[in-house]
Image (cartoon, rainbow, N blue to C red; front, side, top):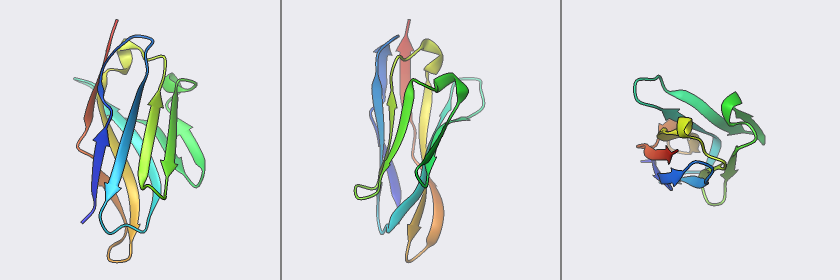
Length: 119
């Protein structure tokens, strides 16, 4: 069984930084791709950043401020968030497409971590 556990959420003032990390555990061969989504109260979940095959993509509003990275030996996906703004406040979710010999390639989700940016 594969689990994704998220770390690094919290409360920060506007202009500050946070680093979110998502660790995959279980019978994993490799993380094929990873992504971070967020959902603010009353809004739909949106894709913030993704990484696959060395390519990255970002939501326009976070370009230049957020950086996503994938570390295969450590089975982690991280999101470095700089110059945070109050509108970045949301629950952030990690998503990873993981390959294992026993189950093939499957998408997994983390439980979510709260990020709150005060003005």
